[in-house]
Image (tube, rainbow, N blue to C red; front, top):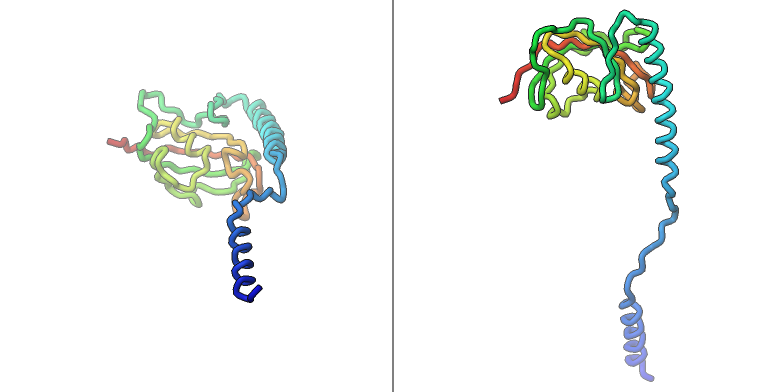
Length: 183
């Protein structure tokens, strides 16, 4: 055999070998979903403890008429509007002030630190905790409400930089200043 035919033979073998269909690679690790199950179990335990702590605070202060929200938090009115004024709806712009305290009443963020907030209901990507976004929807202009938020409605797993640890429930007093209705 001459060198040219040997070269053609090897090129033919390489071509045949390269025509093989690709095979799917197997994962190095297989996840059974146990992490998610354990996380859900852990979060239920955390929520139950926070709920019990808030219930203890409510029982110790019977002078307040506590209400339960279908969004997973509790609240009472400091100032309630008896007039038939509407609550904010989708797209309305609200202005309000709020503070953040521990459940023991220790100030974490004062009203002067948070300042006057402007929020477009359900349309703003504003950096507000979900509890506040849900809470202002229950309010009328001039009302002041104190909310008790479990950690998942507050600052949750991340906490608040240098002020609040992870998974800490809070209370917040909110005063609704105005509602600008959308067109």
